[in-house]
Amino acid sequence: MVIHPTRMYQSQKDGVLRMPAKLDDLDREILAQLQRDAGQPSNKIAATVASSKTRVWNRIRKMRIAGVIKAQTALLDPESLGLEACFFVLIRTSEHDAAWQAAFLNALRNRAEVLEAHRLAGDIDYILKVRVRNAKAYDVFYQSLIAEVKVFNVTALLSMEEIKFTTILPVHPG
Image (cartoon, rainbow, N blue to C red):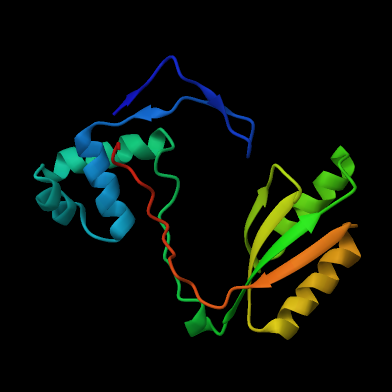
């Protein structure tokens, strides 16, 4: 793995200046395997990508150090945990000052129901992905959120069916 020295970007999450990693085919194959199942042993990954266990382990270690691999985690089935309702929450605000934004972001970070939050361009300021047991649990979430931060308009969209869900990023060029 090589870090490309001329293309830098600043992360919106933490403001840190980073360079995108330049990955070779082996790195990409290893990443593809890890995204399918990060718990598989490195000797199994090595066999799949036609490399040695030591080489695969070293590549994984370098990609962790470079920040390409952020974490190893388990994906849980929300319905098995009783979290059957997924809402996409569209938020418009008339507040745009730093203090409001800090309070809003803090409110989102402190709520486990919020799986994703994005600041948008266009008519809607933010979109949240919220996972709860049911509509009543969503209302409790909603009432708590608007009690903590002022918002101009909130629209909640209930997902009737999850058609596609993946955490797998397209690591192969193309």
